Amino acid sequence: MVRCCTILARLIALPALFGWLSLPLVAQEQAAGKILEIVVSEAVGGGSDSVARLVSRHIGRQLPGQPTVVVRNMPGAGGLAGANYLFNIAPRDGSTIGMVDQSIETQQLFHSKGLMADVLRFNWLGRAMSNNAVLFAWYKAPVKTIEEAFQREIAVSASGQSSLMRWTALKRITGIKFKLIVGHQGTAEATLAMERGEVDALSAPWTLVRSTHADWIRDGKINLLLQTGLDRDHDLQNLPRLVDLARDDQQRKVLELLSQPERIGRSLTAPPGVPLERVAMLRKAMAQMFIDPEFLADAKTMKIDLDPLGGEALQDMIRSGMTYSPDVVARAESFVQPD
Image (tube, one colour):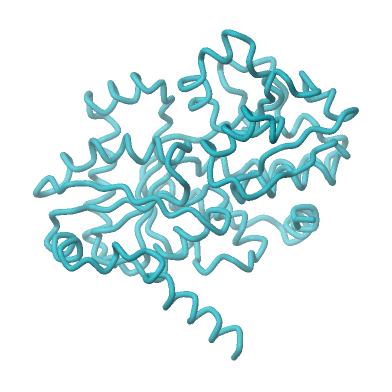
């Protein structure tokens, strides 16, 4: 009973934290189909934010009435604040969609206390790109390769729930010398902390690092340590993957599970309860946008490697991702609990 009251109190308090939600004009224009809102579960400047803003510039042309599209950043709770809002409070008429943290499926498998949503009840609309992230270190850091991190400690920013779970598990499974730093609100803030020498390394989508920090790569300001995807990126063929650090099959299975969020990557979803015809309309608009020449040109300019997946296929993929054996889930969960 106490837990139910606590959850209800949190949900009631959420609108007060985001005063813009109660603005009558915004609400009226959303209801009239004049505004489509995209809620992003991270701060401005991160990988999800960049892709969401790319989508915001083009999805409106594919929808009836060509609504104005606005992006609302809702960081907090390791990426869960936006997901909880979208699931429990957002309008269920198709006027609000979201890009939630890619770790949401894994967090549900682990029964995360902060998650107040059900990944299977979201209406998944489409994936813009899978997300192979890279762990990279500043040139002043005490390590230049991932192998050296087994000998010398480095401070790693874990600004999102996905990275916190991944690096916590890797540290416990392999003994790698990571000192995890939490509290940074997204990639942009963590990057500034790295430049100031407050942390040595952080992870971010490779497509984002390559496009926004090409000069760092060229000038040797950062050293790439590891890639997180199960599939090697086409231009990172010699960079170790997370699963390559496993010493046996059991460790490999756990690290494979923890690499699954990369499959969800930068995906968009709608709240539960949205009428089926609205879901179908949004999925169709997403699919049309993915082949729109203007969208493709904009993505190319941003150096974003698209890897689109339709809404129905994405829904099926997420459903199948919730079928890991209890033994594998329990073993993985035992490694991801933060210190």
